Image 1 (cartoon, rainbow, N blue to C red):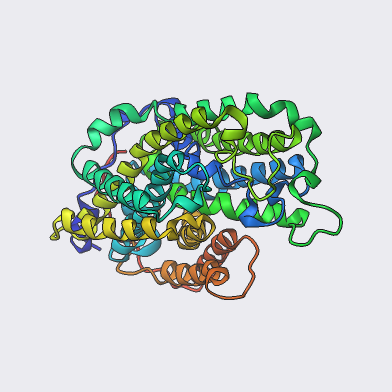
Image 2: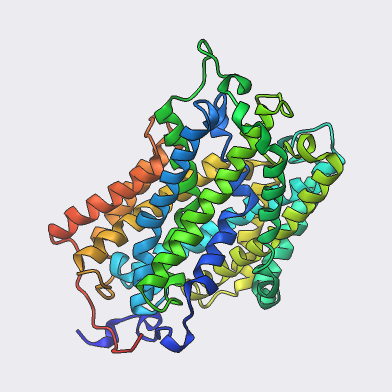
Length: 462
């Protein structure tokens, strides 16, 4: 078929040239490491969705095993294929995704949905960053208890609005310092580690309330399942965005090393330190309240209230660039999918939703937030993997209109991923289940002839 049937945004896409690419340690690895070092990720790793003893209910080794498994799955299942597609084509996600969802459908999936979910991330960022900024003024309240207080509401509104504005107009200034700010949460983790590591050898699950007759603790498989659900749900959108990172890589080694170090390595480092800190705090007797398994909420007991307050402010500061980048990604997505609408309008509406999520505390329910993200992008990553493999480990090219195989597999995967959040149906590791459903169903539907035709793409050099 002629090139004219392609939408302009596809036919005019130009691959990132080889001259603009760089080694993995200059782009992919540090950027992903910054994502996994975000305190919103690692501070809730030990909590285990509120279960008795959290993920430490069967000891530190079991929790570390689940974390390592989750980190490797993020790399191999969710990141590797999108990044390889980006590296081989030099094209971004919203172009490469047209193979799986069609040249018309690609506007919505993954492009528009990726942008939409960024406002969920902005809400989470504003909610917790504001909580960290005002918590030192409420020493008698827990971190979650300061959410929705008048100071928190004011700070969250200003935080989200400033991040959205910078994402639209000043992202270049934020980018200049963003490379170094992830060192702040890393430094905090290291300090807390040295303040607690002496108690690790004395840690016992009984210290976090887990005894033989205790009810509500996770089983061994439950610990691993919770960690997989939490980590994969958090990472799912970043995995699909691997296409945009891969297009800046020179070769397959860059793709692989960037993921192994920046994703798996940083996840194990940040999450592992969080687990060790909590176990050490209880093992040393510095922590005694079994309901508090959050390393940031244990800072007062480990390093003192004043130093802990300074650390909270510093970590909030380090979280501002990711908030700006979320707005920037959303704005770019909407500029592509809604080119005739002023981005100030679309981003403004999205920011208002982010603020609502932040000030009401809905964004603080991270397991639910990560569950929605995992349900949304689990089947995307699964279908993209199968599409890539079936095409001979290359990009098949844009498909006509809405590709039925992609859309049907996404709807089914999304429903499976969302069921535990909207019903009493229990699906273990729902984000991973959504991935599997998306992958298997795409394969079946493709074999049944439900892929739309591949359209001719203008010849270009990656």
